[in-house]
Image (cartoon, rainbow, N blue to C red; front, side):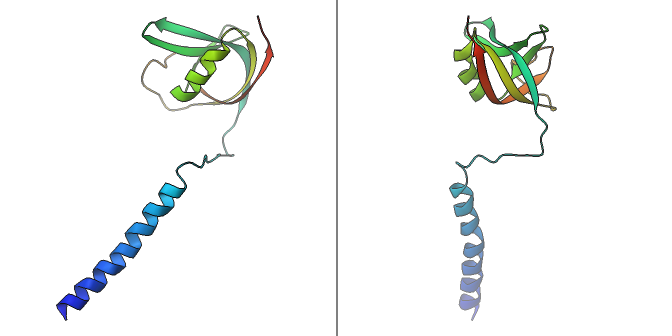
Length: 119
Protein backbone atom coordinates (compact mmCIF):
# COMPACT_ATOMS: atom_id res chain seq x y z
CA UNK A 1 0.00 0.00 0.00
CA UNK A 2 2.85 2.38 0.79
CA UNK A 3 4.41 1.62 -2.59
CA UNK A 4 1.22 2.55 -4.46
CA UNK A 5 0.80 5.75 -2.45
CA UNK A 6 4.43 6.85 -3.01
CA UNK A 7 4.18 6.00 -6.73
CA UNK A 8 1.02 8.12 -7.10
CA UNK A 9 2.67 11.06 -5.34
CA UNK A 10 5.70 10.81 -7.65
CA UNK A 11 3.50 10.67 -10.76
CA UNK A 12 1.44 13.72 -9.73
CA UNK A 13 4.61 15.60 -8.83
CA UNK A 14 6.16 14.76 -12.20
CA UNK A 15 3.06 16.04 -14.03
CA UNK A 16 3.32 19.32 -12.15
CA UNK A 17 7.05 19.81 -12.69
CA UNK A 18 7.66 18.76 -16.28
CA UNK A 19 4.88 20.71 -18.08
CA UNK A 20 6.19 23.94 -16.54
CA UNK A 21 9.69 23.28 -17.86
CA UNK A 22 8.38 22.47 -21.32
CA UNK A 23 6.28 25.65 -21.48
CA UNK A 24 9.19 27.84 -20.39
CA UNK A 25 11.53 26.36 -22.98
CA UNK A 26 8.94 26.76 -25.74
CA UNK A 27 8.52 30.47 -24.95
CA UNK A 28 12.18 31.30 -24.38
CA UNK A 29 12.70 32.58 -27.95
CA UNK A 30 9.55 34.69 -27.99
CA UNK A 31 10.19 38.38 -27.37
CA UNK A 32 7.59 39.75 -25.02
CA UNK A 33 6.69 43.37 -25.67
CA UNK A 34 5.63 45.46 -22.70
CA UNK A 35 3.22 48.08 -24.02
CA UNK A 36 2.96 49.82 -20.65
CA UNK A 37 6.44 51.40 -20.91
CA UNK A 38 6.65 55.01 -22.06
CA UNK A 39 8.89 55.70 -25.04
CA UNK A 40 10.76 58.87 -25.93
CA UNK A 41 12.33 60.14 -29.14
CA UNK A 42 16.03 61.04 -29.25
CA UNK A 43 17.70 62.38 -32.39
CA UNK A 44 21.44 61.95 -32.27
CA UNK A 45 24.51 59.94 -33.16
CA UNK A 46 26.18 56.82 -31.78
CA UNK A 47 29.63 57.40 -30.27
CA UNK A 48 32.06 54.92 -28.74
CA UNK A 49 33.69 55.67 -25.36
CA UNK A 50 36.56 54.13 -23.42
CA UNK A 51 39.83 52.51 -24.42
CA UNK A 52 40.28 49.16 -26.11
CA UNK A 53 39.44 46.50 -25.08
CA UNK A 54 37.01 48.17 -22.66
CA UNK A 55 34.82 50.28 -24.92
CA UNK A 56 31.10 50.97 -24.84
CA UNK A 57 28.69 52.86 -27.06
CA UNK A 58 26.49 55.81 -26.18
CA UNK A 59 24.00 58.11 -27.89
CA UNK A 60 24.77 61.83 -28.12
CA UNK A 61 21.67 63.89 -28.87
CA UNK A 62 21.51 67.27 -30.61
CA UNK A 63 21.88 69.09 -27.26
CA UNK A 64 25.13 67.18 -26.45
CA UNK A 65 23.43 65.10 -23.76
CA UNK A 66 24.98 61.61 -23.60
CA UNK A 67 22.97 58.43 -22.94
CA UNK A 68 24.29 54.93 -22.23
CA UNK A 69 22.81 52.05 -24.24
CA UNK A 70 21.37 48.98 -22.54
CA UNK A 71 21.40 45.97 -23.09
CA UNK A 72 24.84 45.23 -24.47
CA UNK A 73 23.40 43.22 -27.38
CA UNK A 74 21.73 46.37 -28.74
CA UNK A 75 24.88 48.35 -28.01
CA UNK A 76 26.89 45.99 -30.21
CA UNK A 77 24.29 46.30 -32.97
CA UNK A 78 24.28 50.11 -32.82
CA UNK A 79 28.09 50.42 -32.99
CA UNK A 80 27.85 49.74 -36.72
CA UNK A 81 25.74 52.90 -37.12
CA UNK A 82 28.40 55.21 -35.73
CA UNK A 83 28.51 58.46 -37.70
CA UNK A 84 24.88 58.48 -38.87
CA UNK A 85 22.21 60.89 -37.66
CA UNK A 86 19.56 58.60 -36.23
CA UNK A 87 16.07 59.02 -34.79
CA UNK A 88 15.84 56.66 -31.79
CA UNK A 89 12.70 55.52 -30.02
CA UNK A 90 13.93 54.64 -26.52
CA UNK A 91 12.73 53.60 -23.09
CA UNK A 92 14.56 55.13 -20.16
CA UNK A 93 15.96 52.52 -17.76
CA UNK A 94 15.12 53.54 -14.19
CA UNK A 95 17.20 51.06 -12.22
CA UNK A 96 20.98 51.41 -12.09
CA UNK A 97 22.75 49.13 -14.52
CA UNK A 98 26.28 48.20 -13.50
CA UNK A 99 29.28 48.05 -15.80
CA UNK A 100 30.44 50.75 -18.18
CA UNK A 101 26.97 52.18 -18.58
CA UNK A 102 27.33 55.34 -16.51
CA UNK A 103 26.92 58.37 -18.75
CA UNK A 104 25.49 61.70 -17.59
CA UNK A 105 22.21 61.57 -19.52
CA UNK A 106 21.18 58.23 -18.04
CA UNK A 107 20.63 54.82 -19.55
CA UNK A 108 18.25 54.07 -22.41
CA UNK A 109 17.02 50.93 -24.11
CA UNK A 110 16.57 51.56 -27.85
CA UNK A 111 13.34 50.02 -29.10
CA UNK A 112 13.64 51.06 -32.74
CA UNK A 113 15.63 53.53 -34.81
CA UNK A 114 15.61 55.17 -38.21
CA UNK A 115 18.66 56.56 -40.04
CA UNK A 116 18.00 60.17 -41.09
CA UNK A 117 21.25 60.88 -42.98
CA UNK A 118 24.93 59.93 -43.05
CA UNK A 119 28.20 61.78 -42.90
